[in-house]
Length: 466
Image (cartoon, rainbow, N blue to C red):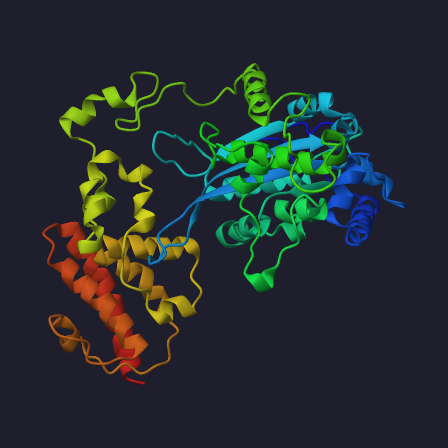
């Protein structure tokens, strides 16, 4: 079986699915609803076959995805942003070849591993893989795995706490995996899978117990020190998820002396997981590198294949400056202003943690997109009043509340708001933004601010006359 990959495992063009094929996928999805995650995976491994399983299940492709996102501070307005996505794929046929401990390392080498950086940060450069494009690629990957005869094959997703990743895909990229016809089953939680295999005890929610963390599961299989594993890297974590899933699925073959609980001796045929992962990394490095990217890149001056970042002359020249961090206002953002010389605005991750005042209720009630929220937060953090006006103005157009605040009252922004109505607050923010911008020295700024001021004045007059 092959995926005929072009970009990260995706087909050059979507493969059409016949009505007959679609019906088979739907029937398979319904059949699998009556099976546990462990039953499905052990069937795929050939350990315990499911009676009456549709034949098309034998052609399935296992996909182990992992998303990484920047965790912004809990008291900021900014939603967490997806920074990278990794996934590993393994055909069912490879699982059937694993007959015992000696075959396990070879099974890991059957995986095709992909890594997409969505957001540039630190020294990482990204040319072309923005959120919308990556969402399309990932969707095409899941929907376009094909067999040798060119027919699309069913996909089974297996992740750890996958519901969190899926929620981010939906909110960030509007990607709803339950609408993809090729995805016939999702194994959403490694802890639940391990519990079905009697490796970890039944969860006592009444006693306040929670599912073990990913690192705890690793410790149970002998990985007691995650140092050097480069966790929270999309591709690496996808491999670790895949490995843990296979350990649970093949547990009776790998650890025949353990009926329940973690194995006393976690080695497999005398080898530890870290050894196998190191061998896997060396094996993958033998694969020809892709034709894109750079071996050396300086994130200070944006030069490739010239010098290492610590040796960059831009550091001594103090020409590196993040305008977002340098202009962040308020005492809470002082620590970000102090680090403004560490990076450029185009690589700024700190912007998602800048402290700003809460968004107006009228703004949140209109369910703004993540990107719109980020833009308003960024504009507010650096006191960019024109952008605040541009972003909030469209949210005011359909308001039907009478505005009693006059332009003269608004112009004097030294005092408190004259009204507590949400719409008045919104108009206050918008008009003050433009009036403050008018005080700037550049002609362009005055003209642009005047244009938005005129729009807001017209809106104020219209609503004030109702």
